[in-house]
Amino acid sequence: MAGRTARRAVPGLVVALLALPVIGGGLAVSRLEERDPFCISCHTLPEATYYDRAVEAVTAGEPYADLSSAHYGSQSTFRCIDCHRGNGGLVHRATTLALGARDAAIWLAGQADDTIEKAEPVAPGLLTAACTKCHAEALLEVGFNNHFHNKLPEAYRLWRAGAELMRPVETPDLPGEALVVEPSPTGVLCVDCHRAHIHVPGSELQAYLDLANTVYPACVRCHREAGHGPLELARR
Image (tube, one colour):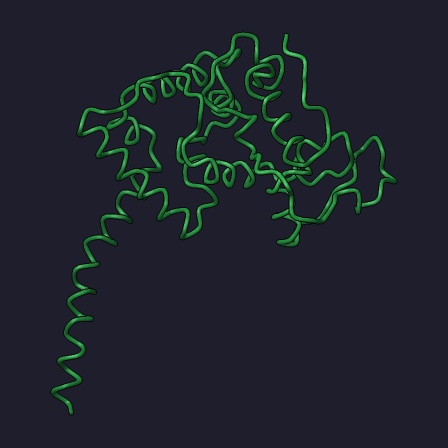
């Protein structure tokens, strides 16, 4: 009996021993990812451009080139990983490591996409979770004037998790129930409007939003998925 027990324990021990280097490597990479120079050591274009913009934001100040640079200009401790690891939980950390391994493979193969102004973000759910860590209040203010935030699925998720709704300053008597506590019919996320690395001259005057090419299409998509609201918005 003891022999059979020992034999059954051997595979588990082998798996544990094989897993140790993987776990250790993951922890080491996670620590290194805290430093922007490590991130940029593998990435070429477009990430090198994003890094240069961040450095310029810190050293030269406003106007910042894009939303990401604005974060660096206003927060001296900001880093790439603050947006790229989601909420920092176990699942998102594992996802971040997997994306890092994919990026490393792309870099080694010399197949990196060097397009600077990318049209679509990679892992938008991960990025949106990172947005929510710092900007939850923007999603939880009730009222129609904030419907482009409080009707998003991320606002509903926060409310279900116990977050407190907030009344707008201009209408303090507005009931909290103004935020419809139902699953959102849209799949629009924070990053569908707020693109961190898109450089649009003059966008610093409108919170780094590209209204014509990014925000208005997201509004139309949300209205279409919700089944009401205008389906045509002016582009200037």
